[in-house]
Length: 352
Image (cartoon, rainbow, N blue to C red; front, side, top):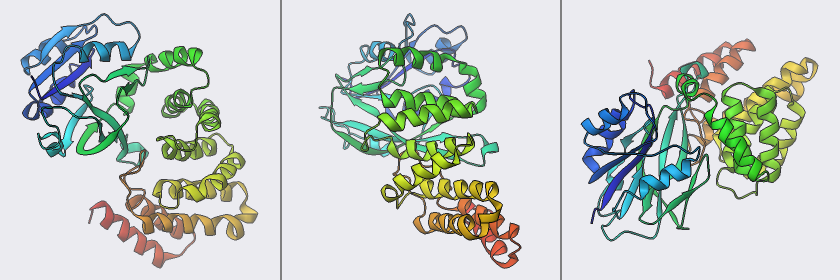
């Protein structure tokens, strides 16, 4: 019996599939690729990299494709990757000491560093996702599918890179995800996770009003303990501010402040929000808003980076907060702290 297999579904991924397979090949016993209708060289490239390639007729259902790929594996453990992902570190989490040949009663969560466009000023957003699955686990959900069958999750040291959220790759995917989300919402209109995912689709495409509406619906429906709550709150703050709904964003911030005292992302978004309020209310800026901007970004630096938080953006607890403070003080004509935080930002970023 195979101990560990890589299992992938792909379609028209000739530009990326070799990278994913090469990153995994030294660590797995088999590589299984299920092609869902490629018109490019994806299947040939996958075979050349040593993968076993099969085909599947696409039925507008990611869970169906995932489950068909898992059915091809006899392994005790299945590492699920997408073609736009690759193993970037922590491969010791794939060892027999962690994943014995006898299997185990848990799903392994791995850290995924999602590359963001450099124009955003942000390097990567961190998510924790279940990608190490024991035999027998299957997926549910037409889109943003989730594995089911084992209740316990364990975080592994494995770290994935991912560039599927860059503008170029989002454009290549077109409106596929949005269309599938709408179909899912027709069947489950009260599912907060689907509203959250639709909100993110709108947000990355800069549809600010639609994003704000969908985040608001997700917040209304989501229990306080859902694992994506941190990302939901932080992204909703930004969406509401961007959509011109500063008052709604302030209400959300007040309601959630006690829940995220150790989140640099929450305080970073809070600083942005209060800066927006200062620009909208210049007569109250110095008295009511700018002191909170300063406090919030300083708080980010006190907290530091918190990669264990799902949805956290690397830099908000370090160089991005320092950079914002440098600009803040420079705008106020305070040259000494501006220079100090400019130097700190460069140091934290690793620059000179």
